[in-house]
Length: 247
Image (cartoon, rainbow, N blue to C red; front, side):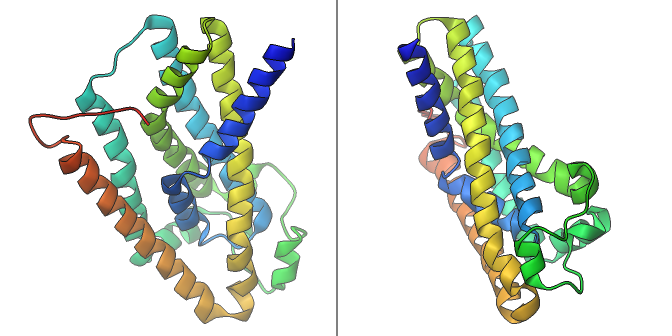
């Protein structure tokens, strides 16, 4: 019993730690830069974590139960998807398309209204109802999809780590779920924290708010380009000799 509780605790803590990986933080920062409601930002973090957990569980279970082997080129391609996604998020943010999509398909309650920023900080202006109604379709599917893509890049490393420490395959799969729960909790805290300055400056310091949004887009674009270059040429995805170590 003590061993099982220890494994659960370690899995949850490592999941929370996994949520703080740089590429994860950069992606969700770009997403919540247009979100000025703390409660909604936390929901976005949960959705990202849910998408991430779905991929980790699906790919990890295949690796654990069926001993599936991922060739280096496929593994690098899975990681490349993250770099390309960061580039796309950065471009959409910098060109204003991200804001227009949020306004077009997001909930009207997810935008700043005439209420003060302090109301949003306290979460009292969020309407009742389900999270899909509160966020809007675009704000629901975007973090979910981004989380799924991020899960592709990290699933192999997580599954292989579990295999080396837990002999029972069913216990290993249960660990993946605990790890995913920790990732969801960690990302919920991260997105809520990131949204604080955007919520505070949304009404009082519009220039600062706009500048922070531009900065998050530039960081996402630059990080995505560097990641794409490293995977494509340093790790060899676009060459004849790819070398991949799950991480």
